[in-house]
Length: 135
Image 1 (tube, rainbow, N blue to C red):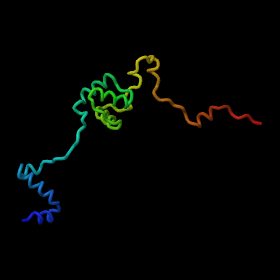
Image 2: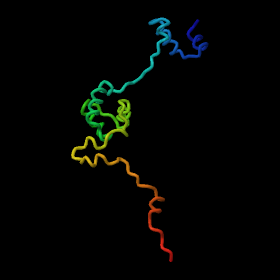
Image 3: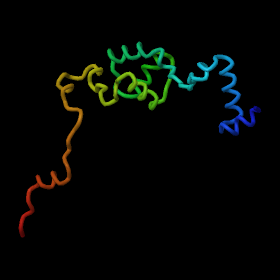
Image 4: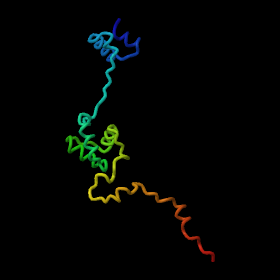
């Protein structure tokens, strides 16, 4: 049977058929069963252990601080988005990066201040004002 007929019957392209035939010649039926998906990996992954141990000792204050530290440790510079994704893979979500723990000179009392501030709503601020005087 010709290749052109096979591609029409099976519904694949000629390139796919040639690829299948090459895989069959190299590995038989077992070679055809193997999946060969391209999965790119980060250039930072070989350095993951050293980066993680560094960040466990010296947590970054911000994404930019993490970018700088990674570049100093590995010589590899990545965008803020890529660094956040990498940090998440290490199990360090940005919301858990400590704010005050790495800043020297911050008084202990400031370290215990909540990191969020509830300013209330406009309704709350209006209700706390003195009632208008009747004329």
